[in-house]
Each structure stands twice: as C-alpha cells, then as structure tokens.
Image (cartoon, rainbow, N blue to C red):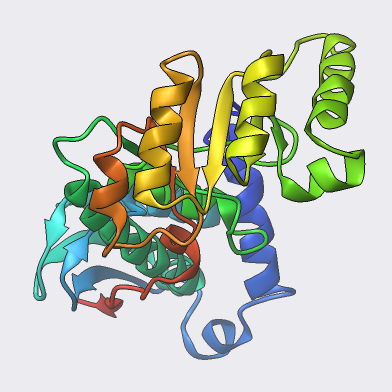
Length: 284
C-alpha cells in the first residue's frame, strides 16, 4: 500500500495548505504584532472525543518555524474532555498565528473522524470484521482523513486509484461483464513491473458465481447484500478469497454485518458524514 505518511509526502501536503492560507503574507499579523514578539499559546479542548492530528500539528509548527517549541500533553488516539490542554507552543508570536488555523482545521476535522471511527470499531468488537475507510474523502485532504481513520482504529483501504485494481460496477458494465473485466485486468496486471492486488465488486449471487468460477482475485467486495445474503455468500466463498461488505452500512446495521464472518466492512461515512470536534488555540 502507498505510504501516504512518508515525510516528503506529508511535507508537500503541509506546504500546499500553508500556501493556500498565507499567500504573499499574513498581513494582519504583520501589521499588528511586532516582528520580535514572542509568546505561548495553548491548544484547548472544548469537546469530547478521540484526539487526532497532534503528530501532524507538530510537523505544521516545524514547517512554519523550526524555532517554535512545542510541549505535548495529550497524544493521538486519546479520549479527551473539555478543559484539557493538548499542547503548548512557544516562540515567535507571528509564527504561532501563521500556523494556528491550519493546525486547528486539521485537528478538529481529524478528531471528529477518529471519534466516529472509534465508535464503529467498538461496535465490531468481538467479531472478526475490520473496519475500512474509502476514497470518499475531501479533495486534497485525503492524507489527514485517512490518517484520522487509522488513529480511530480503522484499516486504511487503498489510498487512491493507483495502488490497487478495484473493479467496481461501472468498470464491469463498461468492460462488458465480469469475465471481460477480469480478463482485461489480468492481462494489464501482468504487464506491470510490480503486479497489484485485484479486488472485484459483485452486486448479486450470479456475479459472485462468475467470479468464483474465474478466480484470480485477492478480494471480493459484496455490495448492498443484506446480512442474511452476505452470510450465505461468505459460506459459498468458503475462505478462498478475502471478503469485504459495502453499501450503506451504518452504526445501526454494522454489528449484524460484522457477525456474518466477513473480513472487512467499508464505510464511506467515516470521512463524509462526521462533525468536527471543537478545539481552540489561545494565547496564554
């Protein structure tokens, strides 16, 4: 799987986000705060949930000003309550102000995702099923959202279109059916310097039977199957392939899907239906 947390990739994300926000200068801070002013600010918790984005915030502060000193009191993955102090940052007041909004935007959104993710992971406790994230992410913010899912306890699925072959319903239809899609995928995959894992989505039992007859894939995604149909399909697959359930699964139905014996359950709502946690950065 693509290492989206590689230092160079994370740094490029931070630099792009800072360029978007700062442009040719933080003119408010430049015009009101002396260039030699120093201070300390605390990142305060105003909500309940799972904290995420602390490690990212340290990299943001460093990118803005390597001289900033940050003391961390609470780490990623920890349950937080209102009134707690996550970290203190000390140094150039202009630099702290420059980093403030990016740190908060990332951490608030990431903490909301991690909190919801953890709640679903808890629902699956005791089953074999692992929770997966999806590509239903905010453009140019996928790195932070995938990272937050990981902090919350989910397993990252593919990062993008480039790190596995996932044949979905539209691919099947455009290719001319299950067999045609798989044959084309096998031929293409064999031409790559490093072959990719292949997963295929099936919409019904007939498509599942076709895939089982052909084989050659690593994972089968069973889309919009009820828990009863999913359980029967998993019995038919009989451990020959890794299985994944998808399609409108939420906190009310998740446990029933987890108890079918499926290996993975993908939930797009992890990244597109969450409320950010309330955090603030205040001068001490």
